[in-house]
Image (cartoon, rainbow, N blue to C red; front, side, top):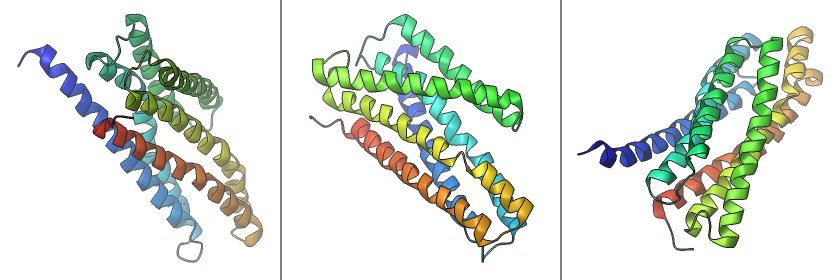
Length: 227
């Protein structure tokens, strides 16, 4: 089989692999978070160890998310669903790889001004890319272009909403840093644990939203229904 014939199925396989890694690892993060909440079952040191493991596993879905952007456009282009402009395709790969570098560089230099700077840049990138997918899906549903099949337009639109929900996870989870510090410095008590628990409960709403949206987009890509 020629390289041109192998390229599209290889990209589709990579696309599916990223989906599996994203959702599978994210479920692992969710489970670890559930165990972290169990004050009666684990000591504080054990719960902190669970949280450290959670952060490490969370790098998998964050990496998959960054790579999904250029890969999705490449699949659409090679599958002849949309003749993606070359500048957009190249730009998507440059931005996707830059985003991936930001994710890992922030992880390596966590709790430093460098990581804070990286995450600020990453935040702007996610809003811009999410806005692009919301536009792409909405425009295609209205005008049947640039994405002609409605299932693909809906998939792009829902991917944009995944960006919104995933961004909201980080926004909602942000107070955890100070709340966790209070637990470590003042000890585990209702006064320190209840605010932390409430923040995690609010975050779970957006986590479930991401899961539901991921499952719907996966179904659309697999079934390709006539909408």
